[in-house]
Length: 293
Image 1 (cartoon, rainbow, N blue to C red):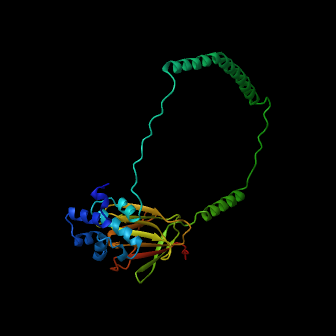
Image 2: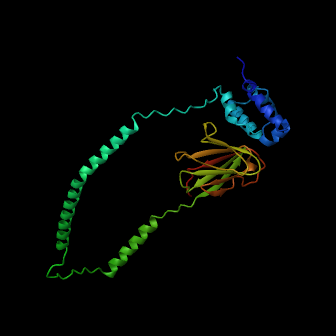
Image 3: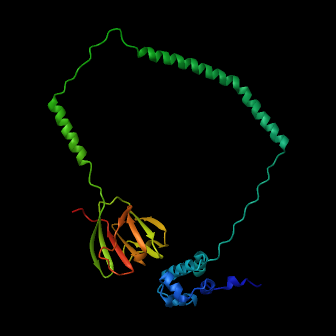
Protein backbone atom coordinates (compact mmCIF):
# COMPACT_ATOMS: atom_id res chain seq x y z
CA UNK A 1 0.00 0.00 0.00
CA UNK A 2 1.43 3.36 -1.04
CA UNK A 3 1.47 6.46 1.17
CA UNK A 4 1.45 10.13 0.30
CA UNK A 5 4.85 11.75 -0.23
CA UNK A 6 4.28 14.27 2.53
CA UNK A 7 3.93 11.54 5.17
CA UNK A 8 7.37 10.16 4.21
CA UNK A 9 9.14 13.53 4.60
CA UNK A 10 11.45 13.81 7.58
CA UNK A 11 11.48 16.79 9.92
CA UNK A 12 14.52 18.25 8.20
CA UNK A 13 13.05 17.78 4.72
CA UNK A 14 9.80 19.52 5.68
CA UNK A 15 11.68 22.49 7.15
CA UNK A 16 14.04 22.70 4.17
CA UNK A 17 11.21 22.54 1.60
CA UNK A 18 9.30 25.26 3.45
CA UNK A 19 12.44 27.44 3.64
CA UNK A 20 13.11 27.08 -0.09
CA UNK A 21 9.46 27.84 -0.93
CA UNK A 22 9.80 31.13 0.99
CA UNK A 23 13.03 31.90 -0.88
CA UNK A 24 15.18 31.92 2.25
CA UNK A 25 18.80 30.85 2.53
CA UNK A 26 20.41 29.27 5.56
CA UNK A 27 21.97 32.67 6.26
CA UNK A 28 18.55 34.36 6.13
CA UNK A 29 17.15 31.75 8.52
CA UNK A 30 20.11 32.30 10.86
CA UNK A 31 19.37 36.05 11.03
CA UNK A 32 15.67 35.43 11.78
CA UNK A 33 16.05 32.71 14.43
CA UNK A 34 19.47 33.70 15.92
CA UNK A 35 20.41 29.98 15.74
CA UNK A 36 23.96 29.03 14.73
CA UNK A 37 24.32 27.91 11.11
CA UNK A 38 25.73 24.47 12.02
CA UNK A 39 22.64 23.68 14.09
CA UNK A 40 20.30 24.79 11.28
CA UNK A 41 22.14 22.58 8.80
CA UNK A 42 22.16 19.66 11.24
CA UNK A 43 18.38 19.82 11.73
CA UNK A 44 17.70 20.02 7.98
CA UNK A 45 19.95 16.96 7.60
CA UNK A 46 18.07 15.19 10.46
CA UNK A 47 21.41 14.92 12.29
CA UNK A 48 19.93 15.37 15.78
CA UNK A 49 22.97 13.75 17.41
CA UNK A 50 24.88 16.95 16.62
CA UNK A 51 22.57 18.98 18.86
CA UNK A 52 23.50 19.86 22.48
CA UNK A 53 20.35 18.24 23.92
CA UNK A 54 16.77 17.26 23.09
CA UNK A 55 15.59 20.48 24.76
CA UNK A 56 17.60 22.64 22.32
CA UNK A 57 16.51 20.43 19.40
CA UNK A 58 12.81 20.98 20.22
CA UNK A 59 13.34 24.71 20.73
CA UNK A 60 15.24 25.13 17.43
CA UNK A 61 12.65 23.07 15.49
CA UNK A 62 9.90 25.35 16.87
CA UNK A 63 11.80 28.54 15.95
CA UNK A 64 12.62 27.27 12.44
CA UNK A 65 9.01 26.22 11.84
CA UNK A 66 7.71 29.63 12.92
CA UNK A 67 10.22 31.37 10.64
CA UNK A 68 8.95 29.46 7.57
CA UNK A 69 5.25 29.60 8.56
CA UNK A 70 4.92 25.92 9.49
CA UNK A 71 2.90 24.50 12.39
CA UNK A 72 5.55 23.26 14.81
CA UNK A 73 3.28 20.87 16.71
CA UNK A 74 3.23 18.02 14.11
CA UNK A 75 7.02 18.31 13.76
CA UNK A 76 7.53 18.09 17.54
CA UNK A 77 5.18 15.09 17.74
CA UNK A 78 7.17 13.47 14.92
CA UNK A 79 10.42 14.19 16.82
CA UNK A 80 8.95 12.63 19.98
CA UNK A 81 7.81 9.58 18.03
CA UNK A 82 4.12 10.26 18.68
CA UNK A 83 1.40 9.51 16.08
CA UNK A 84 -0.55 12.36 14.50
CA UNK A 85 -3.74 13.24 16.28
CA UNK A 86 -6.77 11.62 14.67
CA UNK A 87 -9.96 13.43 13.95
CA UNK A 88 -12.74 12.59 16.32
CA UNK A 89 -16.19 11.46 15.19
CA UNK A 90 -19.59 12.94 15.82
CA UNK A 91 -21.92 10.43 17.48
CA UNK A 92 -25.18 9.79 15.73
CA UNK A 93 -28.19 11.19 17.57
CA UNK A 94 -30.23 8.64 19.45
CA UNK A 95 -33.64 7.83 18.11
CA UNK A 96 -36.44 9.22 20.22
CA UNK A 97 -38.84 6.40 20.99
CA UNK A 98 -42.59 6.87 21.14
CA UNK A 99 -45.12 8.35 18.76
CA UNK A 100 -46.25 11.95 18.68
CA UNK A 101 -49.70 10.88 19.87
CA UNK A 102 -48.28 9.12 22.93
CA UNK A 103 -46.23 12.17 23.85
CA UNK A 104 -49.31 14.39 23.46
CA UNK A 105 -51.37 12.11 25.72
CA UNK A 106 -48.63 12.15 28.34
CA UNK A 107 -48.51 15.97 28.23
CA UNK A 108 -52.31 16.21 28.66
CA UNK A 109 -52.13 13.84 31.62
CA UNK A 110 -49.55 16.03 33.37
CA UNK A 111 -51.67 19.16 32.81
CA UNK A 112 -54.73 17.43 34.28
CA UNK A 113 -52.79 16.39 37.39
CA UNK A 114 -51.52 19.96 37.86
CA UNK A 115 -55.05 21.40 37.54
CA UNK A 116 -56.32 19.01 40.22
CA UNK A 117 -53.84 20.49 42.71
CA UNK A 118 -54.80 24.14 42.06
CA UNK A 119 -57.66 24.33 44.65
CA UNK A 120 -55.42 22.81 47.32
CA UNK A 121 -52.66 25.31 46.55
CA UNK A 122 -55.11 28.24 46.75
CA UNK A 123 -56.37 27.01 50.13
CA UNK A 124 -52.85 26.65 51.51
CA UNK A 125 -51.93 30.14 50.27
CA UNK A 126 -55.05 31.70 51.86
CA UNK A 127 -54.41 30.06 55.24
CA UNK A 128 -50.77 31.15 55.12
CA UNK A 129 -51.78 34.77 54.47
CA UNK A 130 -54.23 34.75 57.39
CA UNK A 131 -51.67 33.28 59.81
CA UNK A 132 -49.03 35.73 58.59
CA UNK A 133 -51.37 38.68 59.17
CA UNK A 134 -52.09 37.57 62.73
CA UNK A 135 -48.38 37.19 63.51
CA UNK A 136 -47.57 40.60 62.00
CA UNK A 137 -50.30 42.34 64.03
CA UNK A 138 -49.07 40.70 67.24
CA UNK A 139 -45.48 41.78 66.63
CA UNK A 140 -46.48 45.38 65.86
CA UNK A 141 -48.60 45.54 69.00
CA UNK A 142 -45.68 44.40 71.17
CA UNK A 143 -43.47 47.08 69.62
CA UNK A 144 -45.81 49.97 70.49
CA UNK A 145 -44.63 52.51 73.08
CA UNK A 146 -45.46 51.91 76.79
CA UNK A 147 -47.93 54.22 78.59
CA UNK A 148 -45.25 55.51 81.03
CA UNK A 149 -41.93 56.55 79.54
CA UNK A 150 -38.77 55.89 81.48
CA UNK A 151 -36.16 58.57 81.92
CA UNK A 152 -33.19 57.85 79.62
CA UNK A 153 -29.95 56.91 81.33
CA UNK A 154 -27.19 59.34 80.44
CA UNK A 155 -23.63 58.04 80.64
CA UNK A 156 -20.91 60.66 80.87
CA UNK A 157 -17.43 60.08 79.52
CA UNK A 158 -14.68 62.46 80.50
CA UNK A 159 -12.81 64.34 77.79
CA UNK A 160 -9.59 62.80 79.09
CA UNK A 161 -10.87 59.25 78.42
CA UNK A 162 -12.06 60.26 74.93
CA UNK A 163 -8.65 61.73 74.12
CA UNK A 164 -6.92 58.58 75.36
CA UNK A 165 -9.14 56.31 73.25
CA UNK A 166 -8.58 58.45 70.15
CA UNK A 167 -4.80 58.33 70.63
CA UNK A 168 -4.83 54.54 71.02
CA UNK A 169 -6.96 54.12 67.86
CA UNK A 170 -4.64 56.35 65.83
CA UNK A 171 -1.60 54.43 67.10
CA UNK A 172 -3.09 51.02 66.29
CA UNK A 173 -4.23 52.13 62.83
CA UNK A 174 -0.75 53.44 62.02
CA UNK A 175 0.79 50.13 63.11
CA UNK A 176 -1.60 48.20 60.83
CA UNK A 177 -0.35 49.99 57.68
CA UNK A 178 3.04 48.49 56.80
CA UNK A 179 4.93 49.83 53.83
CA UNK A 180 4.10 47.72 50.76
CA UNK A 181 5.81 49.51 47.88
CA UNK A 182 7.93 47.02 45.90
CA UNK A 183 11.63 47.84 45.55
CA UNK A 184 14.09 46.08 43.19
CA UNK A 185 17.76 46.74 44.03
CA UNK A 186 20.70 45.85 41.77
CA UNK A 187 23.21 43.69 43.66
CA UNK A 188 26.01 42.68 41.29
CA UNK A 189 26.90 41.38 37.82
CA UNK A 190 29.29 38.45 37.42
CA UNK A 191 30.10 36.04 34.55
CA UNK A 192 26.93 36.81 32.59
CA UNK A 193 24.68 36.66 35.68
CA UNK A 194 22.95 39.81 36.97
CA UNK A 195 21.67 39.69 40.56
CA UNK A 196 18.81 41.74 42.04
CA UNK A 197 17.17 41.88 45.48
CA UNK A 198 13.35 42.16 45.39
CA UNK A 199 11.97 43.79 48.55
CA UNK A 200 8.38 44.24 49.76
CA UNK A 201 6.95 42.56 46.66
CA UNK A 202 3.40 41.28 46.72
CA UNK A 203 3.34 37.51 46.21
CA UNK A 204 2.85 35.68 43.96
CA UNK A 205 5.08 37.71 41.65
CA UNK A 206 3.96 38.26 38.02
CA UNK A 207 6.54 38.70 35.25
CA UNK A 208 5.59 39.98 31.78
CA UNK A 209 7.65 40.09 28.57
CA UNK A 210 7.03 42.37 25.56
CA UNK A 211 8.63 41.44 22.23
CA UNK A 212 10.38 44.23 20.30
CA UNK A 213 11.90 43.86 16.82
CA UNK A 214 12.84 40.15 16.76
CA UNK A 215 11.95 36.91 18.60
CA UNK A 216 13.43 36.27 22.05
CA UNK A 217 13.35 32.96 23.95
CA UNK A 218 12.71 33.27 27.72
CA UNK A 219 13.01 30.56 30.35
CA UNK A 220 12.32 30.56 34.10
CA UNK A 221 13.77 28.16 36.69
CA UNK A 222 14.47 28.22 40.41
CA UNK A 223 18.22 27.51 40.02
CA UNK A 224 20.57 26.59 37.15
CA UNK A 225 20.30 22.94 38.24
CA UNK A 226 16.48 22.82 38.53
CA UNK A 227 14.00 22.20 35.73
CA UNK A 228 12.55 25.08 33.71
CA UNK A 229 8.96 25.70 34.85
CA UNK A 230 8.15 28.25 32.12
CA UNK A 231 9.54 28.89 28.63
CA UNK A 232 8.28 30.76 25.59
CA UNK A 233 9.54 32.47 22.42
CA UNK A 234 8.20 36.04 22.48
CA UNK A 235 7.49 37.45 19.02
CA UNK A 236 7.71 41.15 18.07
CA UNK A 237 4.72 43.09 19.39
CA UNK A 238 3.59 40.19 21.58
CA UNK A 239 3.09 40.49 25.36
CA UNK A 240 3.07 37.37 27.56
CA UNK A 241 2.83 37.01 31.34
CA UNK A 242 3.59 34.25 33.85
CA UNK A 243 3.42 33.86 37.63
CA UNK A 244 6.35 32.85 39.84
CA UNK A 245 5.31 30.17 42.37
CA UNK A 246 4.77 31.78 45.77
CA UNK A 247 6.96 29.26 47.60
CA UNK A 248 10.15 30.16 45.65
CA UNK A 249 12.73 32.41 47.31
CA UNK A 250 14.90 32.75 44.18
CA UNK A 251 14.17 32.60 40.46
CA UNK A 252 16.50 32.59 37.45
CA UNK A 253 15.25 34.25 34.23
CA UNK A 254 17.18 33.49 31.02
CA UNK A 255 16.79 35.78 27.98
CA UNK A 256 18.11 34.33 24.73
CA UNK A 257 18.19 37.71 22.96
CA UNK A 258 17.84 40.34 25.67
CA UNK A 259 17.94 43.36 23.36
CA UNK A 260 14.66 42.24 21.76
CA UNK A 261 12.50 42.16 24.88
CA UNK A 262 11.20 44.43 27.67
CA UNK A 263 10.27 43.17 31.15
CA UNK A 264 7.82 44.14 33.88
CA UNK A 265 7.52 42.76 37.42
CA UNK A 266 4.12 43.18 39.10
CA UNK A 267 3.22 45.60 36.26
CA UNK A 268 6.24 47.84 36.99
CA UNK A 269 9.01 48.41 34.41
CA UNK A 270 12.15 46.42 35.23
CA UNK A 271 15.60 47.54 33.98
CA UNK A 272 17.47 44.23 33.88
CA UNK A 273 20.63 45.80 32.36
CA UNK A 274 21.53 48.75 34.61
CA UNK A 275 25.20 48.66 33.54
CA UNK A 276 24.34 48.64 29.79
CA UNK A 277 26.57 45.63 29.13
CA UNK A 278 26.65 44.28 25.59
CA UNK A 279 25.84 40.64 26.40
CA UNK A 280 23.04 39.35 24.13
CA UNK A 281 22.19 36.29 26.23
CA UNK A 282 21.42 37.37 29.78
CA UNK A 283 20.69 35.46 32.99
CA UNK A 284 18.80 37.42 35.68
CA UNK A 285 18.69 36.11 39.25
CA UNK A 286 16.00 37.54 41.55
CA UNK A 287 16.38 37.16 45.32
CA UNK A 288 12.77 37.20 46.54
CA UNK A 289 13.69 36.67 50.21
CA UNK A 290 15.74 39.86 50.55
CA UNK A 291 15.23 41.70 53.83
CA UNK A 292 14.18 45.35 53.85
CA UNK A 293 17.21 47.01 55.48
